[in-house]
Image 1 (cartoon, helix red, strand yellow):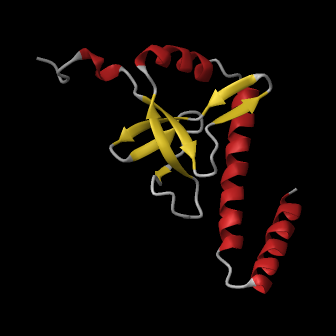
Image 2 (image 1 turned 90 degrees about the vertical axis):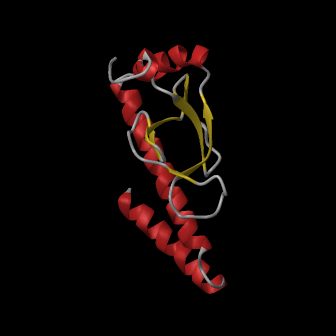
Length: 138
């Protein structure tokens, strides 16, 4: 008897992820690329293209970081098509995907920073800080 009880352990279970900003796919050119996750270890969901860990937030509580609010298993009959989309991406498409994911993460962090203020004055000050930071980055 081998290490695995069945030979299907080599199959990867993919999940369609919906992020806490409501995004479940990214459009690059004419392609609509779903945001997919895999469980590397129990409780450790990683996005497939970037490889970055994304934490669970099904309670939908504001955390200030990029999390996923739903993870729907990809049906086995769709898995092959999903793999073709992901592994068929060109290098510029992967770079654009990563750039968009990074921007979404930054937007979520900035929005949490602004929303966690205590009054109108502090909120305005934080908005100006975020705007200045973005202008400096550009």
